Amino acid sequence: MPQKKNKLRNFKRKKTVKKKPVRIARKPKTIKDKKIKRCAKKEKIAGIITHYFPKISVGVVKMKDSLAIGDNIKIKGHTTDFTQTVTSMQINHVPIQKAKKNQEIGLLVNYRVRKKDTVYKI
Image 1: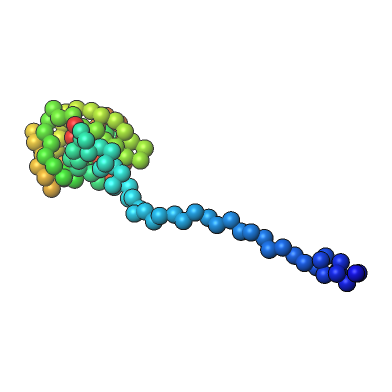
Image 2: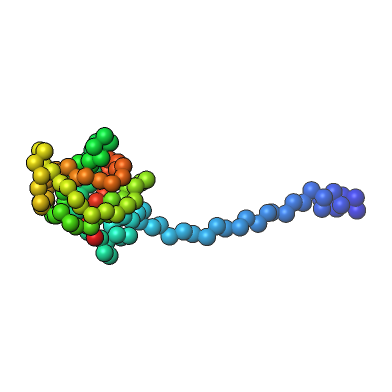
């Protein structure tokens, strides 16, 4: 009998391992996709800020769409989010009334803007 007891003492049970649920692979979303989806309903991308001059409060905008004086715009970026009315635009220090696609313009802004901020036309 003593031999049987030793055999029982050395017997170890297998531990049951819980299986983790299988995750379905999703397509990663980029920042641009999120921006476009969020603002695509009522706002249209007018351009992107390429430079900012703080002393005169002017941002340089690479135009993706047309923009005119009197239009309402929204400038949105990582730390920037405000709306304003376009009051002054210039190309090479010459005031203009309307900017066309693929032009780089100087836009008078009310607040600080940063490189790669997006300008939306409301």
